[in-house]
Length: 244
Image (cartoon, rainbow, N blue to C red; front, side, top):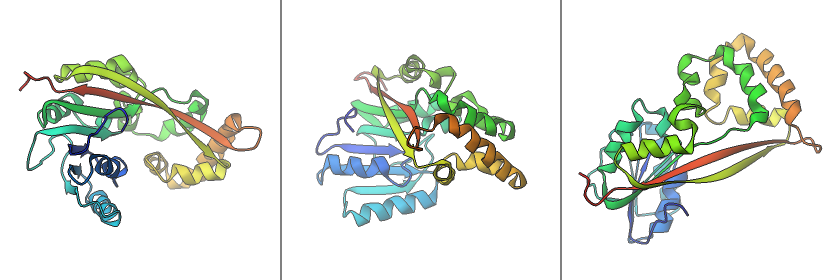
């Protein structure tokens, strides 16, 4: 929110809104005079986002099922577009960015969140899963470690190539503290890493769990907790006045 600087009265679009983590914050920031649209490919996510907006009495929110590659919205000319941890899953990120640019008003702002440097202390844990993962889960785009998604400069070039200007990067570091290996196991099933577990044959999951928990001993702190840090990269840009 700080990097995008939403203003009261802005019209905003959240691409790949999920359950509404960014969407609801945007709605609060633009105020009753603004309007926020969320799109997501998963109907269940859309339903949850709608319910969350209703629970918070946010009347300035609408959410629709739509593909992030080419979001279908009634009206373009958004003041800002946000997309958090979505772009690297898309089949053609450059084409998606070009489509998003056309939904912005001239000088409208875009903010894209992707993963930055990972916590190398966890490399041994990731390695436990690697033999079981399909190629699509090892792809440089989704792993965020190589190619354009592997550096600030690469992401900035991706936005510039899609016609954005004033492109820049803001970084933040997020820390998750887990009580113990059992807490890590519970946590790992609650987000995108669930797909990694599902790629492991069911008969081998307990063996993989033991190996992963053994690797976690190297990152345990003196008090027994486990710390995981992740750099998050926010790449920002704006639509030029003269661009179509």
